[in-house]
Length: 77
Image 1 (cartoon, rainbow, N blue to C red):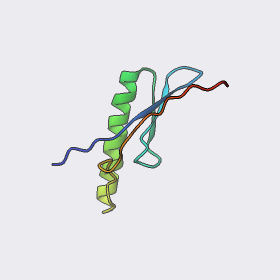
Image 2 (cartoon, one colour):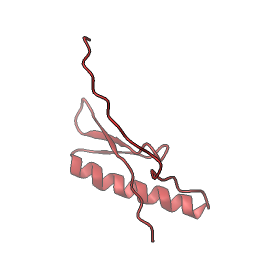
Image 3 (cartoon, rainbow, N blue to C red):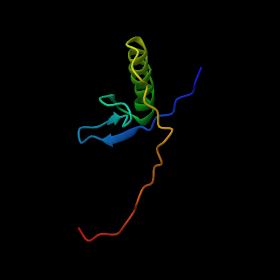
């Protein structure tokens, strides 16, 4: 068994809650009212996504070669 790591991006929604995307898994999107809900729902969505890829003998994307950096700068906007 292999451990897979995926980044989750949570976007706060104006009506409440968060939309969650998994950048490495195209189309893998879910929603949660709280951050804990988001993590739970994302785990389930990723497991189903990977299960479907395996079922169709598709490659499973990983983030092994990804280096993430957040650039912060001041801007007059």
